[in-house]
Image (cartoon, rainbow, N blue to C red):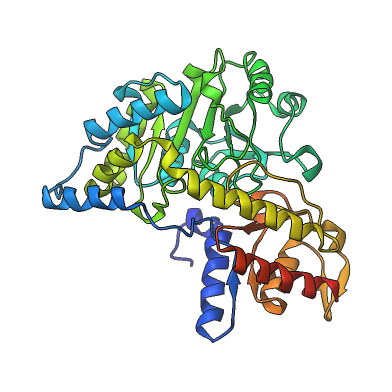
Length: 395
């Protein structure tokens, strides 16, 4: 008899975290591994945010925080939504959580019943599908390709909708593809959704500031979408605060209340000191991020250029986040250094073992033709990683 629940036995391990663990293990054995597997900025949290955290410690912010977040932080989030996204949320629409990951999990738990369907434009972030399954609902992939810049069309959206569709969950800028939906594209998708008032949209905007397209559009600003969109964001990526664990949502009040109820039984309020520091981060002018965004922009250009020189890799030019998602399917069926490459999993493992570079298989993101590289590391490291990959493939 298995002592563990079916729920945990059926749950997939996060492939990004698994690959990062494997890379660390090989490093510990003395192998010179370059890890391009984790989605984490290689910058430090800005000093003005750290100072706010130190001040919060001095001010004794050391007791339980309200389940849905400090009132002052919720006010700051409302100001941020208005300033950056032109969204008019009130504090009653906001819930602060232990990272945007918890925000997404809360949403799945409060919105989905067994048998409901959640549409996932693929590729999608690794945890979406598993979160949907944990709510006993069914993830429905809507496939895209490098040719379409990994974006779905209104026709594809319409074709995927059934009477069981309850949610559509997507990220823009997207992890893993870096794709950014523009206002016209979101308006076209909203036109389809207009006909199906029972469907809510979860818009994961954690990478909004790491965006090279010059503009960013939240789907909640499209006419008719505000009352059926749950906007998810956080400070992890833009402010290099991955370990601070603060995410938040802007949502219709009944959904915000439900998420607060859920969180009240699971974790209660998020870290008190991190919340105080987040007030300072969100009130800062986004221009404080321009040097970091410029560094990512120049790395993107470098990486896209170098990948184009590698035989068998097909790549687009992503407009945001810090990932590239090349299609490597033309290598499937080939034998490299005695290793048969049957799929993206094989190729990702081949690169780890024969090029000493950790990547993540596209399979984890619902696109088995691709692999994901994170370029959140220095240009020297990226040049060396892609030199190794080119050598391992060219042979």
